[in-house]
Length: 74
Image 1 (tube, rainbow, N blue to C red):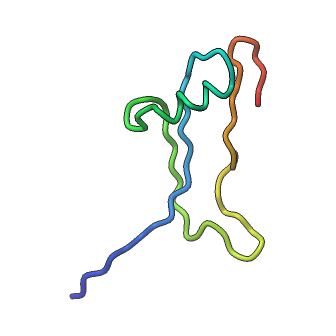
Image 2 (tube, rainbow, N blue to C red; image 1 turned 120 degrees about the horizontal axis):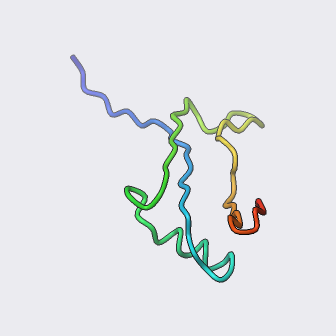
């Protein structure tokens, strides 16, 4: 039997509640959190990230900040 090294593309999301005075500080604090215990993590295993003009990654593709107090979504 042969030994193989397998690499699986993973796309995911990390969601955490953060208290901050503005969106910039919110994002900086989220980056500083430990993914293992700082929030909710969702992973999706993919055959590939993209092929041709099709992206297989789950949405959102960019950082979003939601104001939980005012109920605004972003």
